[in-house]
Image (cartoon, rainbow over all chains, first blue to last red):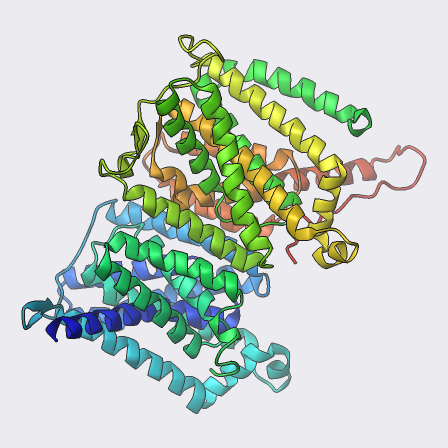
Length: 288
Length: 346
């Protein structure tokens, strides 16, 4: 029974962490059709922002939930204004340019922090379930993933801003003719995507030893989750994260962590071969 | 067959020979060898991306596969001729199967990019985790992140005691690049190559003309992989060690940057881009002030934004426009600059 509970929590954790890693990319890709290959580096920057702030004596939750998202959001804003703005509608070119940006960020961080591992301690303590130990931080990640998904859904569905944003993504020309500046809306959307990414990076910072290149590990997982999820933003993200998170944890339990990661990648190849436009292009069509 | 060759090919051949002969006086042959090998890797992606319109984010996978195939086969066989052939064959066959899986599933642009990238990552993660002694092929231990050192390097075919190394290895690599270059030139002038360019321009139209687009893309993809495999095998001989770093994202990114910078849709562009940027990296590696990745990243961003066609097409059209404006023009109509839609990915 205890084992069953532990496995259940681990699977939930696997799904939540994939959702959290991919959320910023999903906003940017799902709404703006821009694939940001610097996504992993945005997470890495969020992590470094948190660790630096904590080392300066700021409370870990303030650093994680406020400083990191704001900082990465501002970096995202700069990137959007300077580079991505010129490349809308050119999918492959945005991928290449953001890949260049990812190398650039890796270089900058290597120069500032050096090519060494930095880390902080986990702020929430673990507890025992029967004979097993559960990391208390896992619940925080599950909680944050749920909170963010609900928040995005609420903003897009209920508020006027969300309505305008969705309208612009569907047809920028019509939104513009109704008097909305699509340029600004893209800018704000990209800012939100970047801050969500920074937040995710900050949340994962206590769990991993951070190095300048640790972004690439996130990037692949986020990338396949979003692309396999397909066109719908929230349902797509959830279905992609559920599929890969569950597969990863089950394979990790039955064999090893490396095979778990390889299993995700193999599953991604199979899913994309069968439904190239993603899960939500066939199921849950037209949902958000 | 003869009709396929043009006058400028002879010119290119002569210039190449002079270059191979003169370059060692300026740059050490050890560095030149790797530049030539990277040039071949760049050309392999330039062929399938620039002429076939297949954006492969995992060209490094075939490069690494070629290198590992060579190292494993060389340890087991103890000479170099068969391993060299295997290093071309194995990536070629792998790419045929892999390409058939993708192209018969009608995957295009982003989705193709994701899958090729993911397969490279699978190889990277798998090879990285094979440190234990249970992972061995024949006598060769895969060695995980430490890679495989100490395999039999290139020897004169039939004479396992005469090794090809140092200056000789440079000449062998340069000649191999020359052969590959003229093979690509020939391929692009055959009907296969011309149809491949047609597929890049408009896939639907070519398929409506009755050509099997899927099979042709698969074959082109496999040829590109085989060339990358050959480059990988030569790299293994140059470095005398193969490591999982060959499959890394960094390596992948670099091949793509070479092609963008050099110019897609040209044969020279990727070679020049690869050799030039690799040399730049070599020079940058000798200073510690600025990290390499910053420069490489900036170069990629700047080229995508301002010079998306790359150096070679840009220089050609610049030269062409100067030539056009020349006051004493020969009679006849204004020479038209052929605008290649090199960066066009429908």
